[in-house]
Image (tube, rainbow over all chains, first blue to last red):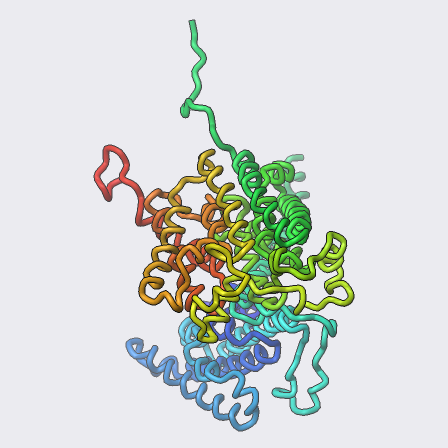
Length: 233
Length: 346
């Protein structure tokens, strides 16, 4: 199997095969914790860390594990890393850990991680696998951050509230408030808001893709034009 | 000699979308007049505001989708959605909430799913639920009916309240607003009062609450006219009201002290409006006859259960949305037998 180039891996992870917007994997944490931008960012970074570590490990042992038992082995590896991440968050980001709660241990069930281990890391060498984990993780994290930001702005009229949970006391002033009298549209914070927001993001991505493809087709047409004219002449 | 031949069907088309919608609007009028009589001008202002917003939004989306604009507006379906929404919300709802709700109904619930005929959920009810969940305070500021209202607002005052967002000087929400009958009944029952005690209050009429039950009657009249004109069939309204009354009746028989008389449920809140005008929405309801009976009865049962045991005093919107979700499944399992075929074959 041909090894994909680094550029392609990055483009796939961030855009073309974005795990949240295209593959629609890992939706449970995606929908559940994105009620503020910081929550989304926190879970996204934790997931990214697990993804990079598990992809790397799976890639290293890919020739040692028998086909028949590969999935349990992958799950064991992922679970170990998730436990490690959970304990470190408990140690260094205790308040954020309390808010994200059950969703940190649940990273282990995030289909993105086992999906990348199975689809990419078990078939590729170490470096591409690490990069794939990083790109896929950042791609998901960006969606979590944007969706969290959207829901937070509409739902309570702020952005980056409680940033101190992640960046320390100095970050208390990061919070942006939009309109003092804004009442907040509760539905955006509630689960339906997550579904509506994700739907809009997917629609936006499809529109952008469509526009880009159209522009590319027009350019290709123009490039092909002189040739056909030459043939006709 | 050659006779002109047409393809089937050979009968005149009885109903097109715009005649159906026009008849629904006409049938709503008696109920709306009653609402204006009992609760002041707010409902009328909301209907106008909602209709203008709905038609504008529909036109904009149709233009964005490169579809014929005039065709979509002239079928009046957006106006019906707007009217049902405006009837369901409190008369003094701030204008921007009405606009927000109608935009959600038309743009998200109706047009994003493909426009008229493709939306799985009733747009008016989805918008109502969106606002009820997001802005519970504004959405429960109802008024008492005129004979119990010490501070009825005039037309200008109502206009001012809706568009400025606050009441005229000297008035507060505590003096102006009043609980809806369902809300009042629930609050009192939560305080462990018995029905016979609760009904001592001047709020109550023969079946439901004064004012409210008459609004129900006028919507019933409109609904019966729709039945007579064959705009709707009897299956959904009858099964929904039966479901509601049977459930309420069983609980009433079991314990008449804590469960109001079944007709109270029928003439309170949105039960009649829901049965004749909302649950019968041809797009979102079940389409087979047997399916419509199941669909309607389930709505009735759900309305009673949510009213009695749920978190909100009225439940028509929630029940209708839940059953909208189930309608395709109900249709799938209630396909009628095709003539000449055995069941299970097509």
